[in-house]
Image 1 (cartoon, rainbow, N blue to C red):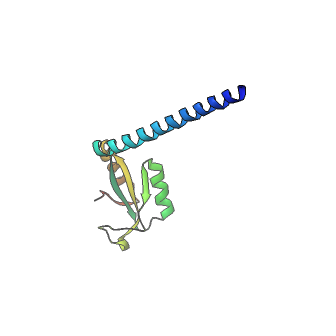
Image 2 (tube, rainbow, N blue to C red):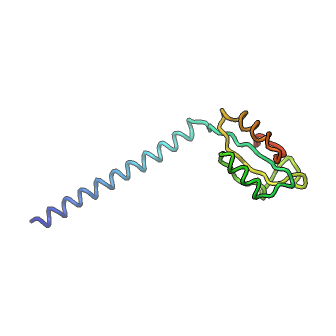
Image 3 (cartoon, helix red, strand yellow):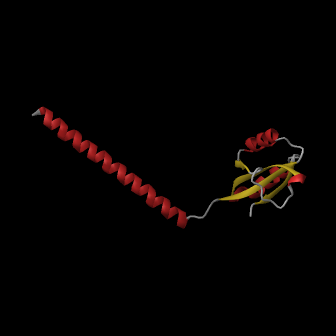
Length: 119
């Protein structure tokens, strides 16, 4: 009799855990869909272009030290600046309220050729 009670209780426990998991997954899906439609992005993509003579390692180090989220876009570059004139290029996610601060901070670095908003 004890053995069947234990199996019955563990079956209930498993059912409760599965139910809660389903509720959490459903809530995440619904919330994700809702926020995609209702909340606009709080970040803006900026492009930082380095001078031609700046090595990729140096440029990456400067971007890392800036503290912003960035990705290297040198290889797949579709830019208004010809490749022969510039060096490494990075796409940076910047909070809307820090655009001016970011631009002035980046422009003050002598290794940087140009900073502009991504199209």
